[in-house]
Length: 340
Image 1 (cartoon, rainbow, N blue to C red):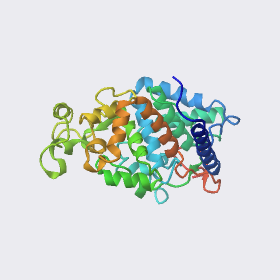
Image 2: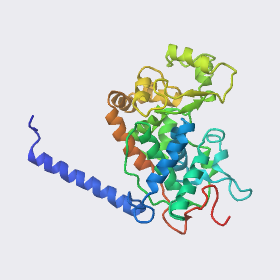
Image 3: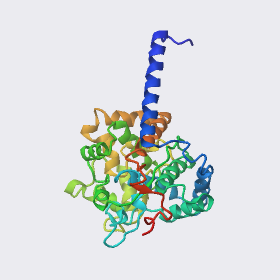
Image 4: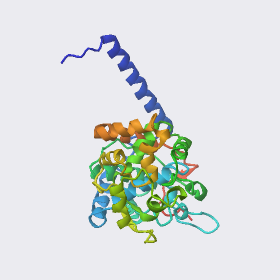
């Protein structure tokens, strides 16, 4: 069928696309992040990271979801600078690993160590730990059935950690107003970013302690969350019994727990979101104007979700990258600052 769009409209659209691309290019240039950053200095970097991740996945089916979570938790705290990877040093560095949202929850650090060792062997002193997290996140999504995107690279590793900021990461217990503010505070002001990036919960596991209140004492009522699907609630009470092991794991997506797909959103449509911070995207009264319709769109179209997720990951990966050598370095060991 021939297009009914006029030549003038096509020309205007072309100008708009060109302007958007120019703005993106200028933004990337200003931040010094580029897809081809390692093409000359470490051309096999992507393949090296991928090999380590594939090997790790053979013995740990959770690792892909864990690695993308590391990238999220790093970027939301003083930007994508690898600060989450730093171990504590008494009197010098209060590690973000010990902050409440991370302590006993984030994982995958030994795999990052293996990636770093492999890259140091191939091209020593070239690939930053912050970039390793960005590359590993994209590979983890792609290998789980999700979208591929052009990873912007060239970050340096930060020299400090920020325990206080890490303590204020987006939480499973946050209401929608708080979640929106936390996203805006790091520069992710488009509601699509919140909904799309939340879709990373389409794979991986969560600890029972994060869903217990929804099952047994929602908002201090002594009753379950009324938005929770009754059949799903019955299933979860078996997985996460009252006074049971809070660190026990249950699937974030009960349908396809290890596949990156749109089922996170189809679950929300029928009140089968695991975490309160998931279900409120569809069910909260304040979500109905803007947020819930985005959930509906992604539930209908996996292509729409994948496209938005890739764009939002690129935006998130460009949160305050360290590119000034006076402010960062290429760590030899992701767990510590050089010469420390």
